Amino acid sequence: MDSALIIEKSIFIVVVFAVTMLMAMYSTWAERKVAAFLQDRVGPNRAGWGGLLQPLADGLKLFAKEEFEPNTPNKFLFFVGPGIAMATALITSAVIPWGDKLELFGRTIQLQATDIDVSILYVFGVVSVGVYGIMIGGWASNNKFSLMGAVRAASQMVSYEVAMGLSIIALLMMSGSLSLHDITVQQHGMNWNIWYQPVGFLIFLICAFAETNRTPFDLAECESELIGGYHTEYSSMKMGFYLFAEYANMFISSTLISVLYFGGYNYPGMDWVGTNWGTNAATLLGIGALFAKICFFIFFYMWVRWTIPRFRYDQLMNLGWKILIPLSIINIMITGVCILAFK
Amino acid sequence: MSTVLLIFYILSAVTLATAFLTIYTKNPIHSAIYLVICMVSIMGHYLLFNAQFLALVQLIVYAGAIMVLFLFTLMLMNLNKEDEVHKPRMTRYAAIIVFIVLSAVLVYVFTDTKPIMGEYDYTGEDFQSIKTLGKVLLNEYMVPFEFASILLLAAMLGVVLVSKKEKDAN
Image (cartoon, rainbow over all chains, first blue to last red):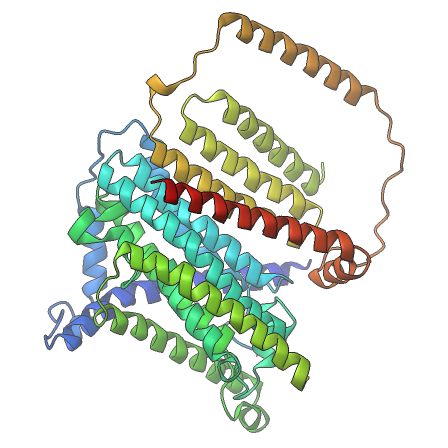
């Protein structure tokens, strides 16, 4: 492998990392602004124009807070929990195609950290490991409320992973590839998967809410019953890591929804732009299109949070096991029949 | 030493150490966490063979599903010192002796073996991608594959049946 490629990939990975962090940071600001908008308030408006410096102030505050450690025999695991949550939230972005080719300094740069054959399985693997951060942290806190939150998070994530996987299978049957790059290329222009897989998209979206522990499925940190759920005992930047990981997860899952069902970096008229304005312009517009879709889905997450009240735990399990899983199996069968009939 | 060999040594050390710690630690949750690390390091071994699909399935199935359920059950059971099973002293000594004899045999066997086959040549043929795997599974090994799926289905139905029965008894 030549060193130029390594440098190129390293720079790209650092940029993706920085963008993920920035998006996660400003999601906290956006969450408060959207909440204020939906509740007819003003929201944060003191630090910077429109409260734009609020995330920085929050971060500074979290760093400066006292580091409280509960009386637990598992100091190390207590420390590791937030780290796992953060790491798994960040490494998913390795397989996501952020854009098409970019021509810089006589090199063609593929805007994807790595295009492995089985990228979707990689995403699922990382997501399924992500629950350890919550479980280990919640258990090591040595607190009953934390443990309850951790156990709820684990059972919820395991249940919804099944429906999520099944909803993806219908998509994979159509695309015939597990690589996110191939799936994106197949959705050229406006040929998006959402037109073919509306039910699959709906199931995936609901499961994404459950996997990221967002309202209406945030039973793992349900304040009215569990104080703060798995991060009750956490303070300072450790709690900041858990909250940050949630927003990073939200960003990544919005990206996945856009890439899988809404064409990723594809947008109508991309061929025209490519021939008239050059490849780089088309690619940059594509990145813009992808980020517009991502921002919409992040907004959607917040919109739902302030619209739909939290589910009860049995309702959550019933929805997952008795509605979503049969629905996704039916979806797979219908997709199979359609592929046989039309292809 | 080549990089691959170095990675192999590190991974093997991690695998062996965590596997040992899994059975050595008293706390069941710590043991489960060591087992998770062991599973993930085995995934690393698969990646060294360039078997990406196998590695990710290892991660999803063992680390992501089975061990999460293990940990989940252990957390719910909330085992204490009082729940520990006390074995008689004779059993412990017998276990130590059996372990030593078994490891002596294994060390002797592995140090004394000679490789039957030579080294594999790199031919560049695609042996690990899901395309190849799918074709092999659904052509050559179609019947065992279907049997395995029937077995899994039967196990799944059995679990549902068992849990239903318990509910009726209450």
